[in-house]
Length: 155
Ligand code: 4NP
Image (cartoon, rainbow, N blue to C red; front, top):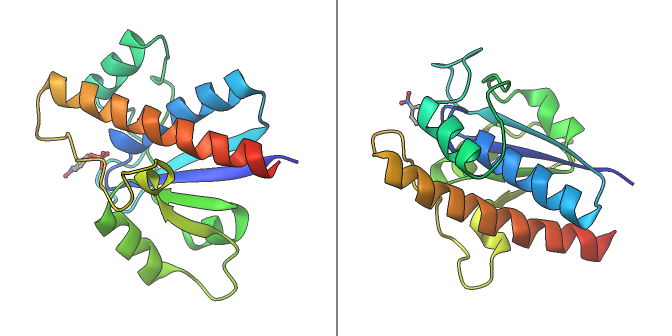
């Protein structure tokens, strides 16, 4: 059965598109059927492609994310997705605040899926430099691997 996962950050142009790409790659590697998407809690970048620095780090790691477009999380997402995974604690708090009655989605923090990193945030690289995006990529890859392992175990 296909598992659906939605990644959430603030702008949907840096961290969550990278998490989306990393999980899609890891699930393909493990042969796990997934539907993956990402969205932001904020609305500043609706319809925009990923930040150039995020697209560049994905490209350095062999993945093209230039076709993705930012959107904002909406109430229907809580009914559609099996898992909604926040990149930091503020994103998770915002999701908890907007969660509608009868929501099916299981909410979590991405790094909760990594042993020894529960509760940690994937830091916002937006005001950082290129090297911060390499750290973002390492973090989302570690999170995606942990999450994919769990999905494979429950398949
Ligand atoms: P993201 O990064 O949440 O990882 O996509 C940000 C993108 C935009 C802004 C903040 C963070 N912003 O303030 O516009």
